[in-house]
Length: 526
Image 1 (tube, rainbow, N blue to C red):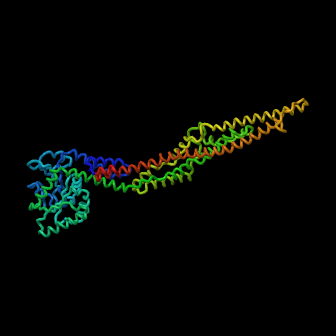
Image 2: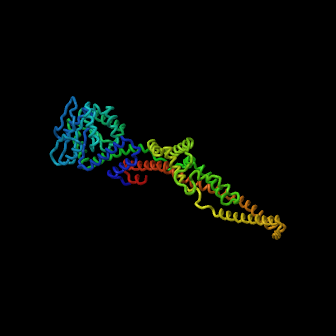
Image 3: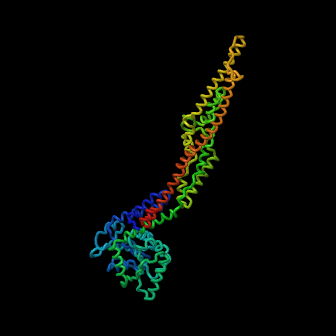
């Protein structure tokens, strides 16, 4: 399992911020941006290791600094704190840009070759002067390694543990505890004090953090402390460890907002599409399609003497501006309060199902993305309906076939009627008339007249039945096409925005996990 480099973890944190920009709070984003900026600046600076001596008033930080330096470089007082501004001791050259970035003006250069170690004496964290406390907190956020100095009198102070040490749990790898002034204790007292301090640190989630017993006055343990710091400087790991801890801390906060992975099942769209289809007037359009098909079939296949009556019946699709050649908005009635209420309820139900188990921040983000005004929703649905072809471009061939047959039968009927009329006229004028041919006992003119009418009406009835079947089939096709168009609106306005937010949640969690844990396999397999 390969471990991500610090640069890769910084990139992952940046990705998490970008993916979660709609959900992550301003405070978290600000803190993360500071970590990214600070890390970028620190990685470009000289590879010195900056150590801070921090702690409460009277713990002996300045005295310990003097002991480590080998002579007095910091002012020491007994009755009150004297460190109002950080003081750096530097061995060797090249740390100037780093100290400029830290904002440390007071510097003391020691002789000898440089070992890459810079030690800062910070103002007291519990100083009565606010600017002293703020300066200490600012530098604590920037240094690479921290030595928290406590003394036997105040090491168990609840304020020290609750306000400071407990908040450093995420930085255990770059933290040392120096129990100063141990020369005031007997061996038994030192052992009990040391053991009790380790117990308190364990309660602060700092179990395992090294605790070094030192005495700035006698020099006991100072060499060991100095060696530990010099070793960290030689290994050049403290700076990256501190930045890594900062990245892990803010990435952990991002992960907390992402929550556990939500289930991958996609919510059903059926009820959503049903509600939107009703709001779009799909049932009205489908009924208009059925009626239009029957009307058009009657005009094309009905008995010619009566089919003209259908012209007086209005085209239901034309009235809705959905006929052939119509374009633009329909004249469907706008969805009423009941339809809109059902549509909004269906949207909420879909959101609830899709975001089940997601953290509140991401649920609210999906609701913001899917919060479409009623007017915009109605316009989108109307455009979807008007852009859907609900009737075929050409009428069925059998309509033309039956229509032609009807005209033939009408011709036969007219021919038979004219023939009978001619025979009746000749008889009325007492003109000699030829005997018409017969079909059995019935004259052919009569057969033609009766057969033409009967067969025409019979064919019209059969065509009407077939037209009803075709109209219902066309209505079903129109229903499918309209629901497909409405589904497109649901995808555009609701489903896709929700999927995008949930996908951003997954990517944010993956990136934050990589930034926090630094595992390549975790990042690639999430």
